[in-house]
Image (tube, rainbow, N blue to C red; front, side, top):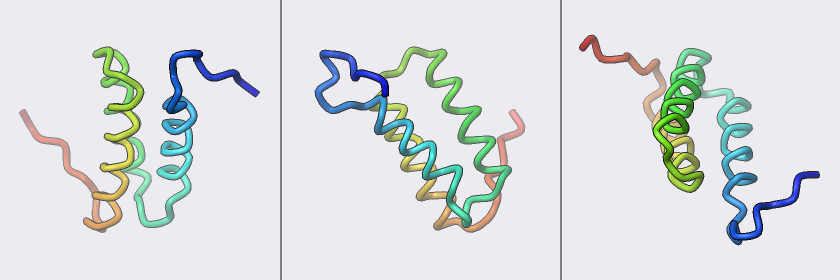
Length: 77
């Protein structure tokens, strides 16, 4: 098992991994939305956002996808 970073007292790495597992396992989130959330997560990582912020976005987008009940549509511009 991986050791948490010594300064990560909240263990955001593990919490992010858990949020991603929850997203991928959720039956009410379409494969299209799962792929879009994961693409967005990669962009967040590339931008250098913190693990806490990444985790928050994954959790919120999962909840929105469940409530919406249909595919997200990327903007055309």
